[in-house]
Length: 116
Image 1 (cartoon, rainbow, N blue to C red):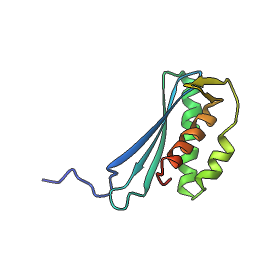
Image 2 (image 1 turned 30 degrees about the vertical axis):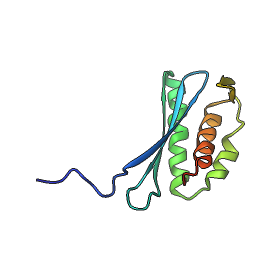
Image 3 (image 1 turned 90 degrees about the horizontal axis):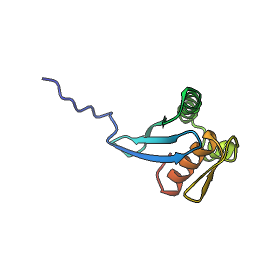
């Protein structure tokens, strides 16, 4: 019988969430179990329609590609934060767009001290 445990599967993940005017965005960062280095990044959404979903999916794919090719997280944040569409206040924090929300999630991960 084969074991279901794969040593390459991440055992830890962190999730960062932002509310936008169209729905909730999640950035999920997984870490491998060997050295706790970032293993993968995912962006997902809930409560939005097809256009919102496609925007989150496109930026999520771009995020994984930038991560794969070593684009520094600070550079991604700099490019995405501040892009404005339809602003939305979430718990006293202004979220200006999907890209801005993703940039804010990445900034929170850095502020928490997690490597990405």
